[in-house]
Length: 362
Image (cartoon, rainbow, N blue to C red):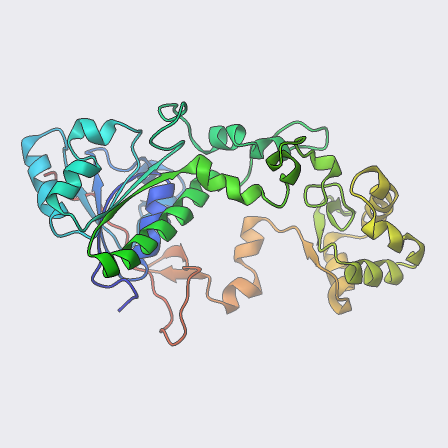
């Protein structure tokens, strides 16, 4: 019995943001009914595959039911209407206007079930000049300013390794849905939530874009402490062509490391302004880290209280002792699942449910 047992969710979303939202609900016992077209969620076809299912699809859709419903047919619309009548949450990820054309926008769904929580997830929201602009994660990051600081050493923006806009929207959407469910306990009324990937990203820049938020200049990575302008928040190449990271700018870490390296004279640079003032410190650390292999540095740092980490690839990360000890990668029936990050005291060890095959058409 999960925290959300007894909650029924209708999920018309695909790819990442909506499925992540409803996955977290399914992992806590919600009854999630995933509505798909005849061709299925495109994630079903995304390689690699394990036990005849996409690893991506399985890890975003485990524990859900799947129904194929043609929303353009009378039978399909009748079937969805029947599901809506007893559901608690309705999630859709179409471009604005699509659900209205299909006859299942919020006013129509609310007329069927006034207590339902309706969540729309889109790139730019249901209103505004960009509402109908097509976009996936990369374009949203570009327009929100985030891609400008996801740059190479020459300042050229590069494709980010994490779909932050997608995942921010899923997390924000989940928070909003849960808030609305709590509110419904008091009012007895449902609610509508307009979640935009763009909107969901913006709060994530408060610590780096303060000048722009206040109407001033945009931040540049080379002069930002958290974006590459500081010696102790930086990535360094090692002798074997791998990399390590210093991830803590507190002076206690600066003091410990530079004292151990016999360069206490550089300690004041650790609190200098990011950018040119810290260039001598960065140069020294770059030269120093190039003298040993990555794993030799891991051993060297073992007895030192410094925010230091080797840069692992995903294979190394998932094979790490930390992942194993905390049970973060679970194998079931020959298939691998990333365990939920949300845990509650007193619950038994988590075991994944199966991801659904496509159901019969309705």
